[in-house]
Length: 317
Image (tube, rainbow, N blue to C red; front, side, top):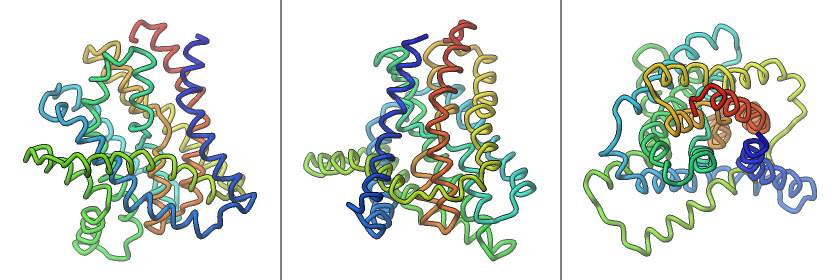
């Protein structure tokens, strides 16, 4: 039990510390608000797309050699959750700048950052195939659905014009472009010169740290008390209800061990850091999105520990 708690803390603490660093740098006026704003734009436009491109290309083998049923459980439950949320959240949240933030806050997880360490700590690197098999499929799905959620309710158009506007927003999104390019490089077997690949790797390593520092430097907590009900609902949906949707389906289909561990990392990890950057850059409620990232990241220490303990007790892990 102690090992599980330590592992959960080790997975989450670096993210929280980077966000805290951003807050301290802002508090000490070491960096200006303009810097954090431009850092968010840099992360959204270049660094996070490069990170996504590299992660998919690095897992090229998983694109052609995978378990259809296993991938289908992951993608299918994500899409089901998205549809249910898009139908239900507008009935609860009236502010159109917040609807998409709440929807993506619940269904979209920090799988890139959490998936590998969660599975590695539980089963070792030999079982990472369960994570790498999912990455090339679920990450593009997360991003397409997130763009749709964030732009659909923000559009002033109706009918066909609204669909076209949302579709254009999706295909123009840097993360979607990165996903498409990665698949082109995989299926067309386009080689990347070593110098270019090394440069992309360096940019990739900057993506998450800079996004987290910028998040910490731009967060405002004055509205957190006013948002407490909506934040509590998002945390419940993200950290409890999403695993309850994904894990029973996989268990009923006979999956055990590292495959369940990877699906736990997919469904039970906190909201993706890039969701904050995307919400801010698309004109949605960036403060609320940032608060969702922070609170789900902190709360996930307890919830991931709970899920691992429960699944091990029931002999599913």
